[in-house]
Amino acid sequence: MSSLHTYMRARTLAQPNRSTCTDRMILFVAALLLFLIPTLPAQASVVTVGDARFPTQLQNEAGKTLELKGTGLARYAVFIRVYGAGLYGPEGVPASSLLERGEPKRLEIEYFVDIKASDLVLAANTILERQLSAEELQALGPRIRQLHDAYRSVRPGDRYVMEYLPDQGTVLRLNGEPLVTVEGRDFARAYFSIWLGDEPLSSNLRNALLGQ
Image 1 (cartoon, rainbow, N blue to C red):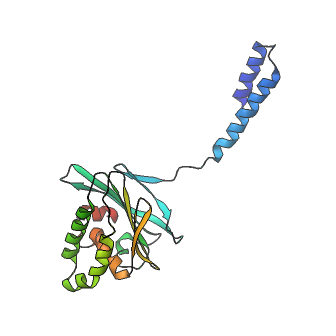
Image 2: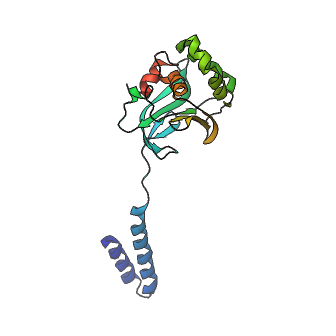
Image 3: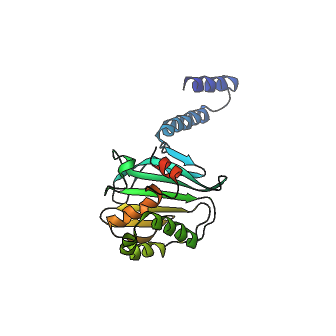
């Protein structure tokens, strides 16, 4: 503020006929702005993957704080960026144990290309058939179809969120809109395995999401 006072005093001396009321008003406004600027909220910390941004912390609808465990970039034919993904889990819970535990977990996927809903279903079924036994597929079949029937085609910038809430089940949202809720911890484990299991969609993506 000392430099501002010096400047205003110089202006007053240089223009002795100017009303001091105007100068006082300028000083008042400047002081008010200096007071207000520090109160502006700081931008939340985020991690950027391609064009997708993932906050390092968020709260789920149950009010539980989740932290970003890892992020990854899915590619097709090396050069084409398909989507950016972020995995969330409770604070203090290792990412490597999220799949097996009944804790809340959340996978966010933001797409960079157009993908038809039928192609999303085809990719998911391919991995599920690779990971699950015939008995498991038969038992989970109705619930898998329930989620797949809710899939919609995506365009660049669209974001799917798949979140397991212990009291509800697995909730699927597209751009914030709830599409379906599928019950069962066993279903959540099977479906999250598409990205986090032993034979996932991409080992590189899985390792990135788990922070390995």
